[in-house]
Image 1 (cartoon, each protein chain N blue to C red):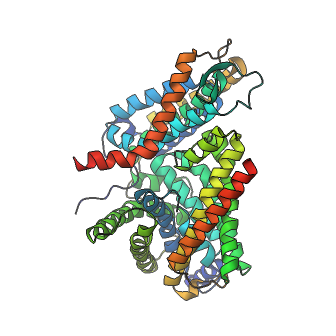
Image 2 (cartoon, one colour):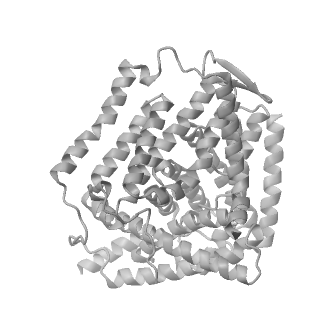
Image 3 (tube, chains in turn purple, blue):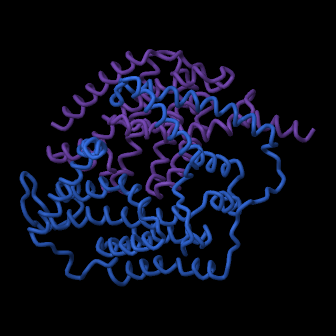
Amino acid sequence: MKDQDTSQQLSSATGGGIPLTYVIALVPVASVMNVIGGTVASALKLPIFLDMIGTAVVAMTIGPWWGALVGVITNVTAGFITGPTSIPFAACNVVGALIWGYGTKWGWANDKLKFFGLSIASGVGVSLMAAPIVIFVFGGATGHASDVLTAGLLAAGGDMWTSVFSSNIIVSSADKILSSFLALAIIGALPTNLQVTGPIMKAESMGKVVLITAGTVVGVILTVVSMNL
Amino acid sequence: MPSVPIGAYVPGDSFFHKIHPFVKFYWVLSFVFFCFFNKNPYINYGVALIGIAMVVLAKTFPSYLRTMVVFGPATFAMIFLQSIVPPAVFDNPQYLAELGPFSLYTDSIIYGMLFSSRILCIVTWSILMLMTLHPGELSASLQRAKVPYTVNFMITTTLQLIPIMQREFSIILSAQKSRAMEAKGFKALLPSIIPVFAGAIDRVQQLSMSLETRAFGSKNERTLMRYKEFSKRDTFLSISALTPIILSMYAKFNLNSFIPSTGFSLSPNVGVFIVAFCGIAFLTIIFGAGFAIRLFGKK
C-alpha cells in the first residue's frame, strides 16, 4: 500500500503516466547525449557546440524543469571531469531548457514556422546568458573556434561585449536550430506517452534543416555586420 | 575487454589519492576563491606551477596534459583578445607599443594574463583533485553530504555512461569510415550521431527496468561499498584549506590584492612578444590541430 502511494506520488511528479524510474534513467542518458554531442561536433570539426540536444529532448517531452535538471547535471558532471570551469555554463543550459519546455507547452513545437521561431528564441536566450559568463569568467575567450570570430570583430573595432555576443549568437543560432531538429528525430524514437509537455511535430528531413540553418546563419551574420558598421 | 576509464580518475597510491574527497573539494573551492580575489597574474601562474609539480608527483601528468589540450587555446586566446581590445575598463591605460593595426596597452595585457592565469590555476588544481578521486568515493561522499539519492544516482550514472558512449561513438565513426563515409562536416553528422543516440534510447529502457526491479526509490539507508573515514590528517588539511582564503582577504584589504605599489610594467618588446606569441599559438591550435593530427597521426 505504501509502495503504491509512493508510486502515485512519483508519477504525478512527472506529469502523470510516466514511471519515475524511466525519467530517472532518461535524465543521465540525456546528459550523456549533451556531452557526446560536443564530442561529435569536435570530431567532425563542426564550428558549433551540439551540447544541448539532450536538454532539448527532455525539456520538450517531460517538461522545462526536468530539462533544466539535465542541463545542470551535464555541467556539474563535466565539472567532475574537466574542472569547475564548465559549471557556470549550466545557466545557459537552464535558459535553453526553459525556452524549449515552455515553448512546447504553449504550442510552439507543433508547427514548422513556430518551431523554427522557438529554436531561434533558444539561440538568442542562450547567447544572452553566455556572453556575460564568457566575459566575466573567461575574459572573452573559451578556446572554441568562435573565438576567431570574436577576434575578427574586435580587430574590426568592435568592443568586447558586442564582439562576444555577436560571435556567440552566430554560432548559437546555427547550433540551436540543428539541436532542435535533431531532438525532434530523437523524440520520434521515444515512447509517445512520454510527450507530456505539449504536442510536438514530426521530424523534418536533415537536408532541409541544414538549408534552414545555413540561411539563418547568413541572415544573422548580415544583421551583425550591419549593426557593427 | 579493456576497462573503461570513469570520469578523470587515474589509479594510483599518491598522497592525493589517499586524502578524503571532502578535503579535495575544500581545497578546490579555496583555490577558486583565491584566484578570483588575487589581482596579480604572476602569483596565479606560480600557484599553477606548484599544482603542475604536484600533478607530476601524483604520477598523473599524461592525463593532465590530455585535459589541458582543451584549455590550451583558451588560455592563449584570453591574453590575445584582451590585448587587442581598447582598454575600456581602465581610467589611464599605459600605452606600450604597436603591433600591426593594434595599439597595445600594458593594462590590457596584464588583464588578459590575469584571466588566463586564473583559469590555468583553477583547472590545474581541480584536475589534480579529480584525477585522484575514485568515482565510488565521489558517490559515497555525495551521499554523506546529504545530496538527494536521486541526484547522486543521476550524476554517477552520467559519469559512468560518458566513456562508454564515447567509445561507442568512436566505434561507429570507424565503421562509417570503413564504408568510405567522409568523417567530417555536416554530411557526416546524421550517420554518426543517430546510431549513438538510438543506442542511448535503448539504454534508457534497460536502465529503467533495472531500477524497477531493484527497488529504486526505497527509503532504506544504503550501504557504501567504498568510503574513506575522515581522519585527523583530513581534519588538519580541511582547516588548512582556509589559508588561501585568509591570504586573499588579507591581501585585498592590506596589500591591494597583490598589485605592486608601482603598478605592473612590461617592456614594449616583451609586450609585443606575449601578444604575438599568444595570437599565433591560439590560431595555430584552432586551425592547425587537425592538420597536425593528420600529419603526425600517419607516422
